[in-house]
Every structure is written in structure tokens, then in C-alpha cells.
Image 1 (tube, each protein chain N blue to C red):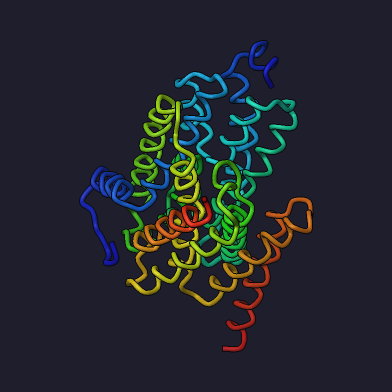
Image 2: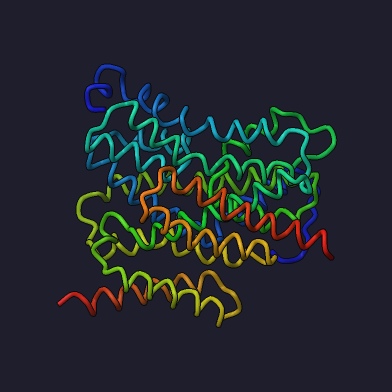
Length: 242
Length: 115
């Protein structure tokens, strides 16, 4: 959807968003990820209803992976809650960057609750790419449609994975696991059109593993703050001098 | 966790250690974003931080894999990511083609290393 789109009604915008979700590469990614998570939930003895509920109310792959594996391997409630909250910090700058794209004069806070809850990596990447081509008055509906499409896919894939659990061959399992980093990698490269975005991307790719290797605490948080701030400072400097 | 699942119930545990510690950061973002527009310095900075953080997550997932993917040698995983990037650039910046090429490369590399 490279050219601009206008819609007659909010319902049409919602439907277009959902359609966009179901035809994007992330559908494959979500299916792969959630088949894996569903299989894991089965192996640690959770119910398929619990698995689907966790997808709807948590809606974050890394956090779900932490909870489900902790139920399998042990760990205290506090430890798990801490690990989940550390993994979830990434959501905060994403929400701050995303919501202003959807706001229009007269927008109310309650309408923003749904896209706030829907914010996840796949939805964020696609929204930043697609929303500029959607009329501002329909961006909220479009984004909710897009997110609903993704969430529905993930719920169904988690359910399927739960019942497929017995015997995913190791090679297939590794291919499914590789889908997530690979697709996020190429999509962020695809989205990083401005020089500052490219700088943030390259710094993040380098700093993430480096800080983890040095065993810096809160490595990902520092990766974001350091890499992002350098890119931001470069952008400001360029705006000043040009 | 096991005892808590029994004593508190699986859904209460889900809300306590899953929903609340995760959702709090989304709500912090919601509150902070109030009244800001797309050109606000805080919004621009947040976008840069989110991109760098996301890139860090991606690089860590490829270099320090877990589960079955950890069984594939690291050079194969890095090589597959590089091939995916090359295919993506070569074929009209298509994410789909890139992902496909990367997965095929991973499969070929894993098969090559496995006797």
C-alpha cells in the first residue's frame, strides 16, 4: 500500500487494516512464533484457554515466553514479574512514538487505550510504515483493524501449536524460531529511510550484543538510550546546520 | 511459580506476573504521549530509542539464540542473516524474498554442518 488511501467510513478503514495485517509477512512470523509458544504451553501443563487468554491480555511474545518457561523451570513470582517488566520497557518509547500519529483535535484518552494495549513490535513497524498513507481521521480505526488481524492470527496459531505440540522436528523448530529476528531485521532496515534512523539501527545492532556480551545490566535499555540518543543528537545537529 | 499456580490459580498468576508488569510500560507511554505531536522532540527521540532498542533485540536473537535455534552454529545464523539482507536489497527491497532466502540459507547451512 504505497499510495494514499481514503475511506468512506471508520468500518472500511478497520477492514482495510485487518486485510493489510492478514496479507503482510508478519502473519507468517506470528504463526511461527505462536505455534512455538502454544507448544511450550502444552509441554508445561497449561490449558489451551490459558494460552489464548495470555495472548489477548499480555500481547507480547517475549513476556509470554518468560512466563510460560518460568512455569516449566521454576522461579519465584517476583523474579518472573521483574523479568517480564524488563522485557516490556521497549513498549514505552514505541507507544510515545506511535500515539501522536493517530491523534486528531478532539481525540479522547479512552480511544487511545486500545491502540496502547495493541502496541507490539509487528504492529508498531507496520503502523509507522502505513499510517502516513492513511487520512488522519481514519488512522485509529485502521490501526485497530491491523492489530486485531494480528492478534486473531496469534490466538489461532497458539491454539494450533498447543495441539501440534507432540513432536515438532528440531530443524522445523529452528526455522520457526529464526522467522522472528529475520523478519524484524529486514522490516526495520526497510523502514529506516532517513539517515538518523539508519544510524539508530546500526548502533542498536552493534550495541545490543556488545553490552550483553559485557554483561552490562539492563543491556537492552542502554542499547536503546545510547544508540537512540546518538542518532537523535546527530539529527538535531544536522537540522541546526542545514 | 508451580505452587503459586495452584494456590492463586493460573489466571490470577497470569494477571499478576504477565499482564500488570507488561502493561505498565504501555500506560507510561500513553500518559507521556499526551499533548505531544509527531514533531515533538520527545516523540522524535523516542522513535530513535525504539529503533535502536529493537535492533539490539534482533541482533541478540540472532547471535545468542535459545531453544532449537541454538543448535544451529552461530556462523550459519549470521551467514543466513547476511544472505537475507543481500536478497532483500537485490530484489526490490522485498522483506518476503529476504526472509525466504534467509530461511533457505539457514536450512542449507544446518544440513551442511550436521553429519
